[in-house]
Image (cartoon, rainbow, N blue to C red):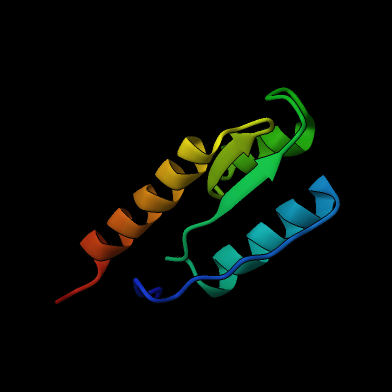
Length: 85
């Protein structure tokens, strides 16, 4: 179970690696929040796979700091709601 103190940052050079990595993280840590950053448009097959399999929040480049901060805040809030006190 992911706790509010469990965070992981992974950098990947290709969309295939990003999707494969996200799939493996979801398999091992189903409660872990994932944010995927991509330069591809919404119609790219790997971007569609990310959305269809609900692998995590998708940020399309270019994005600004506020969008990234909001995505992180959303994951932290969701984690706190699902973590028993």
